Image 1 (cartoon, protein in one colour):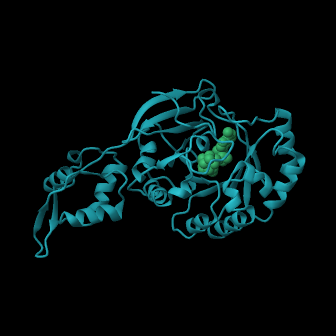
Image 2 (tube, rainbow, N blue to C red):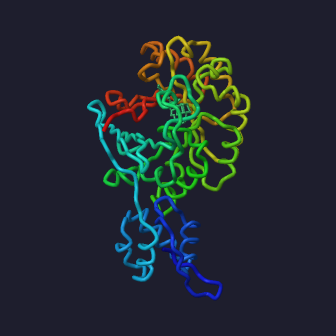
Image 3 (tube, protein in one colour):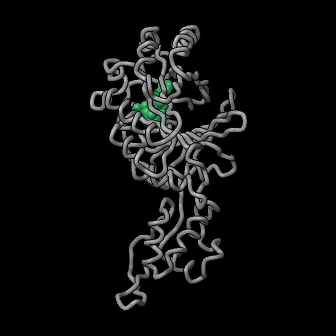
Length: 356
Ligand code: SAH
Ligand code: SF4
């Protein structure tokens, strides 16, 4: 049942089959809902604060809302989230991998990594991924569906006892192909009524869709941007990332430049190092050339093996040689230490194939 304002200003009762889940609704949606209930719109802020900051799941906890409003809300809505099925902790570095069950039974994985006083959560935005990169376990599992806004933020909210300081949208899926839900999730993460994370503590990683990068650049809330570059030429990149055929390097780099013109600071290029494929001195030289003029950092990620994928990590010596050749030619180069390799929690290993 829902109460609606009648043309005369009174309340009308409308019967609805299903209650709505408020998790994932943000200020504009809550204002609309309150308007429909004949309530003042400013109460949307209180409701958001209770749901996201205080993490209330029962309207009766919302003691500064009137009893009448709480009753109205209970009669038409509920607050529910994703369910934690399983936690695995790495014995190598204490990173943790979480398997969550969604309302329709689908599963996603989320990873938490610790580094000094940083706790970074690697959040998924889709179940699977439609882009099918040939080196990535998520790409291999194919695409099931987009996550809702609620399912994206809930990965962070569900881990309430961990003091999360940074978020990277680098789990399963391509965030820019789930644009609206991702943006709304970013707003909830960033707001003081929500999770109070500064925009610079949130990184969005993308395989590179130029129009969407530009759209993101034109938005008020701009996260840090990471681009999965992975190869220095169109010919090689298309072999790893089929999306490169439609969105080649030139267009991608032009969109990246646009982003850096709109948001101060460097972007990150991620480069997965694959044995005998993109790990030569020639590759490093070409890579250093294509990123010239872009304020950036290059993050080298030694390939993490994934079941049934035909790639390997280069030797330690090769990785160091690549980094040392690249470094004087590019302003900043980092070599990522993989986390959680023993629990299949490293980059590109998420596939939610684990049985509960
Ligand atoms: N779809 C987005 C975000 C998720 S992928 C994107 O591609 O950016 C997150 C990162 O994992 C990407 O940088 C990708 O290149 C990297 N990755 C995927 N498979 C990997 C693997 N097997 N080893 C190391 N990194 C991998
Ligand atoms: Fe999708 Fe990113 Fe994996 Fe490519 S690397 S398949 S875009 S999750």
